[in-house]
Image 1 (cartoon, rainbow, N blue to C red):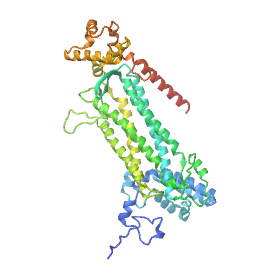
Image 2: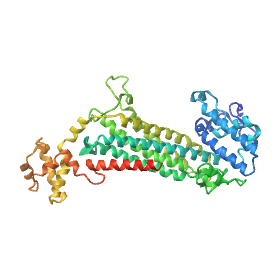
Image 3: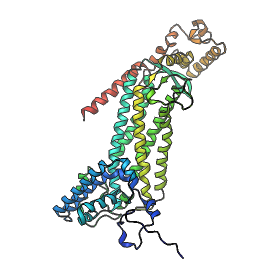
Length: 480
C-alpha cells in the first residue's frame, strides 16, 4: 500500500495560492523545505512599495475603483507599519505559516480588507514580483555599499595625510624591497577601493529597468502601463522581454562579483596589518576595543577582526560561486532554483558592509609604530636600486649598473659592512662613475625624492595626489 500522506495543519501552512488545482494539502516536510519567508522577509519594504505602485497601475487600467485602490493602499501601508515594529526576537518565536514574503503580505491584506485584497495580484506573478523586489533591494543596498566605501576612502586619505613623512620598507615576495612613505601605502588601498566603488556604481546602470508587468513569463493580459509604473518606482524603463525578465539574476550575480573583488582587497589589506601587528614586524598596535585576547594565554592581543575579514572573504566567494553554479543550467524561463539567490545575496550584503565599517574604525584608531618602521626603512640594502639608478644617470646601461651594484651588495653582506657607511673611494673601486653627489641618494628622503613621477612615492607626488583627491571630493559635494 502507498504511504499515507501527512496532513498539513492550516496554522502550519496557510491556504496556498494554487490550492484550486490540488486535492491534497502540502506535505509538512515539503512545506518547510520550500518556504523562504524566514529569510526573504527582509524584502517587505520593497514588496509593499511595488504593490502600491501596482495597485495604482490597476486603477489606471480600470481594474480597480478609486475606493478599492484606496482600501488596498491603506491596508498595505498598515502592514508595512506593523512589520517595521516586529522585533527579530519575537519573530523567532512565531511559527512560519506563509511560503514567502509575498504570500505573507497577501494573506495579511486579505485579513485586513477582505475579498478586495484578492484583486491585488491581477496581472502580476510572483515571478515578476520577486524580480522587482530584488532590483529595489539591490538599488538601496548598492547605494549603501557605495557610501561605506567612500567613507572608508576618506578615512584612508585623512590618515595618509598625517603619515606622509612616516617611512617603511615596501615589499615584494614579502622581502624588503625599497623604502616608501606610509601615506603611499595607505593610498594604495584607496586606489583598490576606488575601483571597487566604480564597479558598484556601474552596476546601477543595469538596475534601471523595471520587471513588474512581465507576469509569470509571457507578460500580462490587462494592458498595464509599465512605463508609468517604471517612472513611479524610479526606473528608467520597463524590461524589454518577459521571458528574460522573470529569470534574470544578472544584478544579483554582479553585486556578488563586485563584492568578491572588494573582499579580496579588504583581505589583502587585513593580511598586511595582521603581519604588521605581529611581534616580528611591530609596525602597528591595534586598539584594545578592536582586538581580542586568549582564553588561555594572558599576554595575547589578537587581530581577530582582521582575521575574520580575511576568513569571510571565502564566504563571499562561495556566494558568488553558488549563484553562478545555480544559473548555469537553467532553461528559460522561471525555475524554482532561483529561490536560492536570496540567502547568498543577503548574507553577502551584511558581510561586506560589516567589513567596511570595521576597516573604517581600524583606519581611524590604529597606532603606527613609527620608530620600528623607520628603523626597518633605514636598512641600506633598500637603496640598492637607487645606486643602480644613479649609475644609469651617469651613462651606464641599467643591466651593467645592476651587475655592479649586485657586487657591492654581495661585499656589504659578506663582510657585514653596510655600504651606506663606505667612503667614496670604496664605491669607485667598483665603478669610476661614482662621484661625491652619490651620497645625496644614500638617504631615505634622497631616494624618495627621485620617485617624483605621477603615482610615485616622493613626498611631492603624495601631496599632489592627496590634493587631487580632495578636489574631487569638493566637486562631488558641489554637484550634490
